[in-house]
Image 1 (spheres, rainbow, N blue to C red):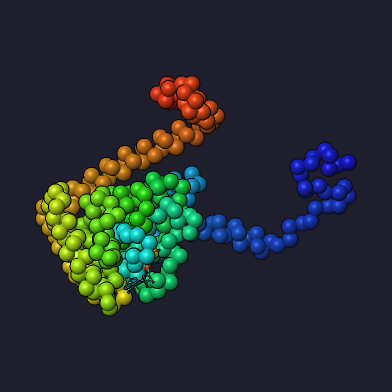
Image 2: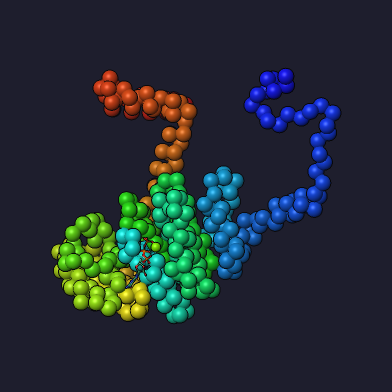
Length: 362
Ligand SMILES: Nc1nc2c(ncn2[C@@H]2O[C@H](COP(=O)(O)OP(=O)(O)OP(=O)(O)O)[C@@H](O)[C@H]2O)c(=O)[nH]1
Ligand SMILES: [Mg+2]
């Protein structure tokens, strides 16, 4: 019996029956043509520098790809775009789910495009591989902005590690800037370390809040308060206005207790409504003020230089870690060593050392 010879294959052909000819020549030619149509990196760079959105999207797809060939091409495109990037303001926006980030970005982004700005919206959300991209998920909340030809919205790269997602977003920032976007908004959910990652890739960090029952400062992480350049109390409309103003007072009082920032910028607290659009223009005034003040003091360009160095080191750390954990020898010995540590058979230090020496002897 032929199936016993090769039980794993389901592609047995009976002798005497010739395989079907591939007849759809037109389809094959189309596939070949499409392959040829993949633009070269020079073409992509050219397209991006001319503000072509298709080129921009294609380049971001390359950045997000895990295929080494794509990564190499993405690197060429990024290097070609780098001299044309940097002329922008990068704004990070964070806040817990439901605070109104998407609605706010719709209102704020539309306000900016009406001022003649070109706005790109990106996201860092390592959990979005589950929800298929938080921004994409609620593109309906950004109906106006999605249609706006001066806005570009890209959902979060579906993610492996936070480091991976953050790197992809940072590279996408460069591409967006080279394509002429002068205001970059990076959204993140208030989960885990993603806020710290976003903070280290933006110039201005905005924390969205809503007023609660007078216990505004409860449960808010000190680290996030320290990172914020502005705290905006959203949903200040209808019956909520009074409570929002009280929250504003409370946050202001709390912020004054923090030591001065390295930027010498005194964080501002404002209220707004992403629905009525009250307070939206004041937020832009605050950000513009920050831009002027930190450029005059030299802090703005200095911070970007520091961030570049930070991301260089992060990339090295990330790659080293990946390389270590992907070695077959490490994979096969790691679990064993973990168990031995758990059972007190070996000290954590010795266990780590033995794995590291396996790695370094390679
Ligand atoms: N009254 C009022 N409602 C608002 C305002 N902004 C947002 N909302 C409502 O709050 C709800 C959540 O808004 P989203 O914009 O989806 O909030 P989000 O922070 O993006 O939420 P996630 O994407 O889940 O993290 C929606 O029902 C909005 O209509 C506002 O300024 N005033
Ligand atoms: Mg949202």
